[in-house]
Amino acid sequence: MNRQKEIVVCGREDILSQSIEYFLSEHEGWNVDSLAFQEDTDEISRAIEALQPDFLIIHEKCYLDRPKFPFQLLRNHPGMLLILLSLENNLMEVYSKQDICVKDVSDLISLIENK
Image (cartoon, rainbow, N blue to C red; front, side):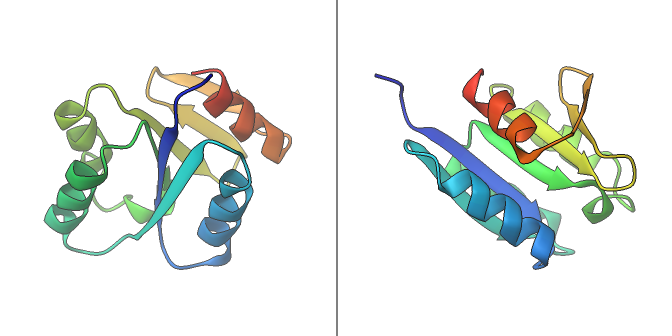
C-alpha cells in the first residue's frame, strides 16, 4: 500500500491553480492543498512548515520578482520536491534540474506517482 502523498499548489487564485488542484485531487491517496501566493513570503513559509508537503507546485509567474524564494523553501525542506510550471514553453522544472516537456496532464501526474 502506498503512503499518502501531500501536495501543495502555490499560485494565484486563477484557473491554472484551480485546474491543477482539481486534476491532482482526483487521485486516491493524494492530499492536495492550495495556497494563494501573496507578497508575504514568510506567511507562505509558515504554511509550508505546517503542511510538510512531499511536493510543492508553483507557477513561475508567482515568483519572478523573488527568484530565490522557491529555493529558500527547498533549503528549509530538503525532502520536498519542487515543481516550477511555465505556461510560456509548457515545461515543468523539477528541483533536480530536470526539465520535462508537458504534453498532457498525465505528465504531471506521472511525475508525482513515480516519486
